[in-house]
Length: 85
Image 1 (cartoon, rainbow, N blue to C red):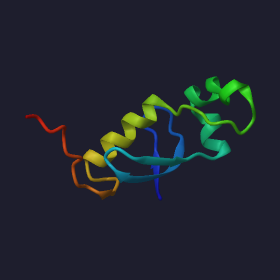
Image 2 (cartoon, rainbow, N blue to C red; image 1 turned 90 degrees about the vertical axis):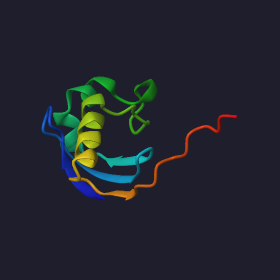
Image 3 (cartoon, one colour; image 1 turned 180 degrees about the vertical axis):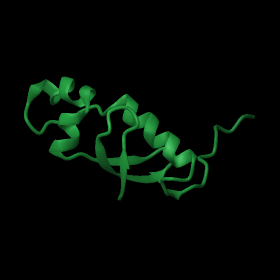
Protein backbone atom coordinates (compact mmCIF):
# COMPACT_ATOMS: atom_id res chain seq x y z
CA UNK A 1 0.00 0.00 0.00
CA UNK A 2 1.17 3.50 -0.78
CA UNK A 3 0.42 6.68 1.18
CA UNK A 4 -1.74 9.24 -0.59
CA UNK A 5 -3.11 12.61 0.50
CA UNK A 6 -6.53 13.76 -0.72
CA UNK A 7 -6.21 16.93 -2.80
CA UNK A 8 -9.51 18.22 -1.39
CA UNK A 9 -9.29 17.81 2.41
CA UNK A 10 -5.73 16.59 3.00
CA UNK A 11 -6.73 13.27 4.58
CA UNK A 12 -3.82 10.80 4.39
CA UNK A 13 -4.73 7.19 3.59
CA UNK A 14 -3.00 4.08 2.31
CA UNK A 15 -3.94 2.96 -1.20
CA UNK A 16 -3.32 -0.21 -3.20
CA UNK A 17 -4.24 0.22 -6.87
CA UNK A 18 -4.34 -3.44 -7.89
CA UNK A 19 -5.74 -2.64 -11.34
CA UNK A 20 -7.64 0.24 -12.95
CA UNK A 21 -10.86 -1.40 -11.75
CA UNK A 22 -9.78 -2.50 -8.24
CA UNK A 23 -8.60 -0.17 -5.51
CA UNK A 24 -8.16 -0.81 -1.80
CA UNK A 25 -8.12 2.10 0.64
CA UNK A 26 -7.09 1.88 4.26
CA UNK A 27 -8.46 4.66 6.43
CA UNK A 28 -7.36 5.53 9.94
CA UNK A 29 -9.28 7.58 12.51
CA UNK A 30 -7.31 10.75 11.74
CA UNK A 31 -8.11 10.52 8.01
CA UNK A 32 -11.80 9.76 8.70
CA UNK A 33 -12.09 12.77 10.99
CA UNK A 34 -10.43 15.04 8.42
CA UNK A 35 -12.64 13.95 5.49
CA UNK A 36 -16.03 15.73 5.49
CA UNK A 37 -17.66 13.02 3.37
CA UNK A 38 -16.54 10.19 5.65
CA UNK A 39 -17.61 12.10 8.78
CA UNK A 40 -21.10 12.61 7.35
CA UNK A 41 -21.55 8.98 6.27
CA UNK A 42 -21.00 7.12 9.51
CA UNK A 43 -21.32 3.38 8.99
CA UNK A 44 -24.00 1.49 7.12
CA UNK A 45 -27.10 1.63 9.36
CA UNK A 46 -24.94 3.90 11.57
CA UNK A 47 -23.33 0.84 13.16
CA UNK A 48 -19.73 1.26 14.37
CA UNK A 49 -17.31 -0.56 12.08
CA UNK A 50 -19.89 -1.06 9.32
CA UNK A 51 -18.71 -0.60 5.71
CA UNK A 52 -18.69 2.90 4.30
CA UNK A 53 -19.19 3.98 0.72
CA UNK A 54 -15.96 5.94 0.50
CA UNK A 55 -15.24 9.47 -0.62
CA UNK A 56 -15.81 10.77 -4.15
CA UNK A 57 -13.06 13.41 -3.82
CA UNK A 58 -10.56 10.79 -2.68
CA UNK A 59 -11.58 8.57 -5.61
CA UNK A 60 -10.81 11.49 -7.95
CA UNK A 61 -7.42 11.96 -6.23
CA UNK A 62 -6.63 8.26 -6.65
CA UNK A 63 -7.52 8.33 -10.37
CA UNK A 64 -5.44 11.47 -10.88
CA UNK A 65 -2.46 10.01 -8.99
CA UNK A 66 -2.60 6.74 -10.96
CA UNK A 67 -2.95 8.54 -14.30
CA UNK A 68 -0.01 10.81 -13.47
CA UNK A 69 2.15 7.87 -12.41
CA UNK A 70 2.29 9.00 -8.77
CA UNK A 71 0.49 5.83 -7.67
CA UNK A 72 1.53 2.42 -8.94
CA UNK A 73 -1.13 0.37 -10.73
CA UNK A 74 -0.01 -3.22 -10.07
CA UNK A 75 -1.76 -4.75 -13.10
CA UNK A 76 -1.91 -2.11 -15.82
CA UNK A 77 -3.46 -4.50 -18.37
CA UNK A 78 -6.71 -3.02 -19.70
CA UNK A 79 -9.85 -5.06 -19.12
CA UNK A 80 -11.12 -6.28 -22.50
CA UNK A 81 -14.34 -4.73 -23.68
CA UNK A 82 -17.39 -6.72 -24.67
CA UNK A 83 -17.10 -8.91 -27.73
CA UNK A 84 -19.14 -7.42 -30.54
CA UNK A 85 -20.25 -9.75 -33.32
